[in-house]
Image 1 (cartoon, rainbow, N blue to C red):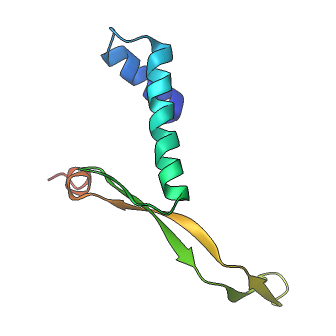
Image 2: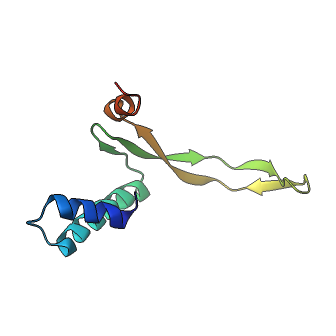
Length: 93
């Protein structure tokens, strides 16, 4: 599901809301999650999962074509851990 499909689905299920308002709500939620993660915070959505940021240290990697050593800089990557409710639902429990 992409963002526009999510907005459409929420708008259909809530006919009392204008689509432009639903779009603002969805965009605000994603912006707040992104902002919190950029500040290094963890974002937990109960029953769904938790978004966090993991730090990957600087390391020496290999260019797969040439085999030469390449310096890979330290970086921060997003990480998502599913919640128990979502995991159970995906596994048919």
